[in-house]
Amino acid sequence: MTQAVYNALRDNIAGIPVSQLAREFGGTPLFVYDAAVIKERCAQLKDFGTVRFAQKACPSQAILKLAREQGLKVDAVSAGEIMRAFAVGYKPEEIAYTCDIFDSDALELVCGDAFGCVVNVGSLDMIDQLAERLGERAKGFELTVRVNPGFGHGHGAKTNTGGPLSKHGIWHEQLGEAVARAARYGMTVTGLHMHIGSGSDFAHLAQVSDSMRRFALSVGPQIKSVSCGGGIPTPYQTGEEYFDVPRYTEVWHGAVAELEAAFGHKVELETEPGRFIVADSGYLVTKICAVKRQADNIFYLVDAGFTHLGRPMFYGSYHPISIAYAPENGTPEPGTQEVVVGGPLCESGDVFTQKEGGIVLKRELPVAKPGDYLILEVAGAYGAAMNSNYNTKFLAPEVLVENGAARLTRKKQSFEHLIANEIF
Image 1 (cartoon, rainbow, N blue to C red):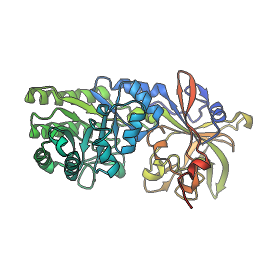
Image 2 (cartoon, one colour; image 1 turned 90 degrees about the vertical axis):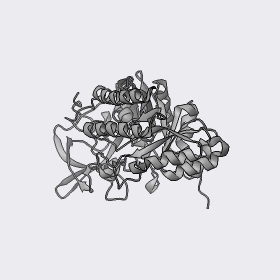
Image 3 (cartoon, rainbow, N blue to C red; image 1 turned 30 degrees about the horizontal axis):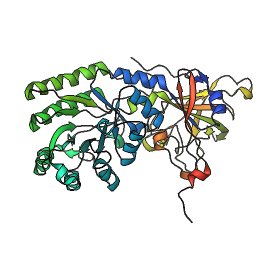
Image 4 (cartoon, rainbow, N blue to C red; image 1 turned 45 degrees about the vertical axis):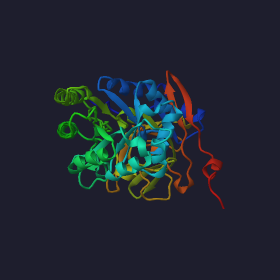
């Protein structure tokens, strides 16, 4: 299925007028999520196996709760994410902790209140640290290992999570050492995990399944589960196609069937999508505050910056952009024009229309006025999740639209909240 054409004009999100959303929830910037899209993405993976939502993509408790209601387990990459999962009702056995290090908080948690969660280690040192902290409880403890297969892929260099220049995972040539090191403490490696990058294409994702099969066979029948990680792509530009999930499912089921035949027991298949679940459910609604001309360039300057959506500046990522006219602005001027869209921050890189390397681009958009709304689309993944207070900008509120009704899921940040932990 090909990605739908994004209209340059949009008057509603999930059936609710953009101007109404902004008015009702305190203005802009404002993140809005369409629950129906999230439910649809969860349903697409129902035949895969165990699905864990990679909450780093969008850690909102409301989104986490919605994922749990759809039957998804959860992946956590920090002590804080484990606590978020607890807050919406997840039990330790429904959580996987995946990281390349233990900081003190995470180690205490997985050996304490979160004991029983899947511990997926990405460094050999983590095995020693876990065993030391568990003490006698290490005997019989089952853990999983994240393997760096020696190759990677992604939509950009910064999203490539495999290969010799990636910090992620235990190098594939050290897998035997990881199994042996765990055994010295009485622990058993019963699961393998592999993730090569975000936005990988089908050929690279399929390559993972073959590598996983070979690595699992090298470890032997103690393997009870394999996880293909995340990385299922999401289309951002018109003409890009949605990923063929049934085909991907079939490939992985085939690999697992071979392992089950070799081992003589069931092998659980897992995946941990983040972007795929939430990306195209999310919209960042902003307001055009100024329209200015710099030589031959026209700028739409909006009230959201990379503190709200960092992907364009960090990765040169493309986001569809649409315009919603403000009713109070009267009859809009017809036509389109090529513009640069920039934010309010005191940074030259605070531009939403750029490609990797910081090269500023123009985008053809409808003629608009100050007060009109500009919507950055497909902003549900790594949007609000990566918000910051740089320039002492407030975090944007978040709204979830479900069954035709919009509700606030994160309040607009106040100045008092912003400085609450500071001491002078």
